[in-house]
Length: 210
Image 1 (tube, rainbow, N blue to C red):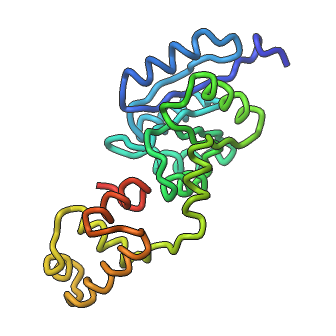
Image 2: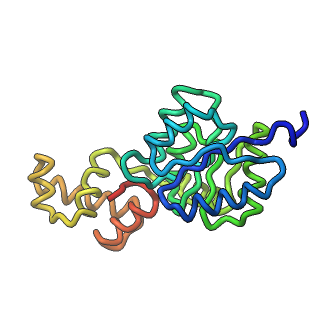
């Protein structure tokens, strides 16, 4: 099939207009691509997807109203064959794995070179999956780590929100000793020096979100 007759139809989803403009400008000069729609949050992304049925959706993860991961899950539930490339500023391994499990075909950092983005769009359109080297490194680095339990993640989330052990115990309806024990496990599993360091690691890796 001639690429000029049937260009790759792209939907760009990002809450930053400048990012969408950058993608639009990049796609415009490609003979084998066309931008069919734009969205600034997850809900809009689902509407635009239903309207245009793009070949490729470029999806940001951190967005207001509805995040990219929830939009990705909703789109893939409606259209299991949908091809989604996650484009984000975060290389957290937990977040990456969530997106891949939800059906993303590729995961790229926004600082990727234009050539890498275009190459990935073409690869995914051809039916292949793609991860940038940084993303592959993040996953490999933590592949053998002990994962935090749901209870430990609840504690970490409250630590990141600035709560002391007693406040955490009250909110989770557990004893302060239980919280201390969970904090100890969290520090050990994340290789963190203290509570603040643990919260930073948790946010960076996508284990928790503020």
